[in-house]
Amino acid sequence: VRLAIRADSQDRYTFRITDTGKGIAPEYQESIFGKFTQVNKKNDSFVRDESGSGLGLFISQSLVALMGGRIELESEPGQGSRFHFSIALPPATPVPVPKTLPVGQKEFAELRILLAEDIHINAFLAKTVLEKARHRVDVAQSGAEVLELLQAGEYDLILMDIEMPVMDGIQATRQIRNGGAGEQKRRIPIIAMTAHVLADVREACLEAGMNGFITKPIEISGLNAEISNVLQIWA
Image 1: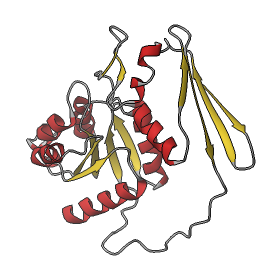
Image 2: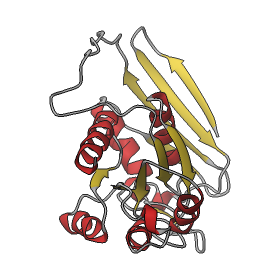
Image 3: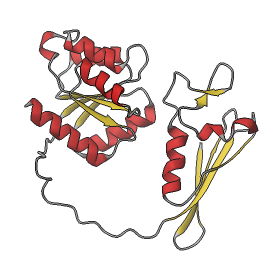
Image 4: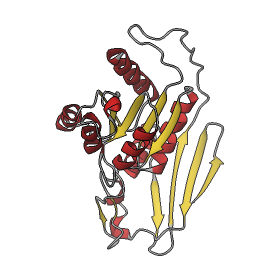
């Protein structure tokens, strides 16, 4: 994958991303930007696959649209793909950083967090954000790995993706609450992370024993607030 950025004017830039993948047939080039759509590795069709959420390009297109642009695609089967968009990026206005947290929020520094996320880029971004806040983070890529790491180590909190291979987040939470990672680990705070915003998904997470709920894409302020709220209640 290659990224090229070109300054078209003082405040306008064009971004071009090129890959050397299998390419995308013309009849699928519009649908690939839809929700829950991705390459089916078995037959090259574009359907909901088991390897991810199918929201990446939809979210990317939505974010670029909010900035006044549109992602364009050039691709041929067997020749890779080229995505490009142009947006205005004027200098930002400095925002003062508050010296105190909002009322009702407490700072919890240097937490030991177990992050359960099977999609590499999502795990990398979340881990980076958490480590900048001085937390120590270990990553598990399945519910089964969560149980293994939790049995072997000490953690203050679990951030649990609900869609993972081998064992999903809801199954892993039930196992933990039933003592599957050890009796002393049953009450560890668990926050669900999911791209789904439906009420029944949230309800299923809470019924499984999770203590909080955040939606993807994750916002830093929302993540910090939910961690603070859950740990204050759990304390």
